[in-house]
Length: 219
Image (cartoon, rainbow, N blue to C red; front, top):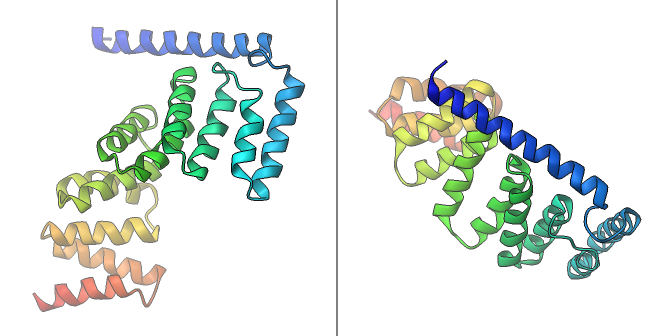
């Protein structure tokens, strides 16, 4: 085993120890200053208020029992803040949740939403790359990152990520269609034709796939 691998394994062990310690600390402290019963009641009320469209009230009820050391409270407040359009607050809460649980994929997926809302594409790409470091086969993130490259007209970059999604989900409409267009733009018309025809098995009258085949047939 080389030195780099050994360092990576040690780093993961340290993160795991911190993770367990945080869980134990939260359990012993009752998620901060508020008793567990109060927190459960606050969550229950926040769900009730959200279901009635009272998002700000759902936020307010959780803020009354807020603890910066609670992953669950920060995650829920991140979601609600984003729903309310309070994007700076949402980013703060999601980042706090990530600080508590460094391997959390769900918090990073949540973070992506307010980041998209404020059109911070650099942070979005970094967030997706952070997720793939933790979960390399995350199909949702591979597809979205591939789409970012596609719309930059970086078709080689797009292919790298969308190919991975198609390999995991070979009959997924969006992934197969976009890989078809990616290959078309790379000049790989034979591969694109195969994929467009596969799309027509998923959605027999799909306009985008038919358009792609039409363009290929004109060449």
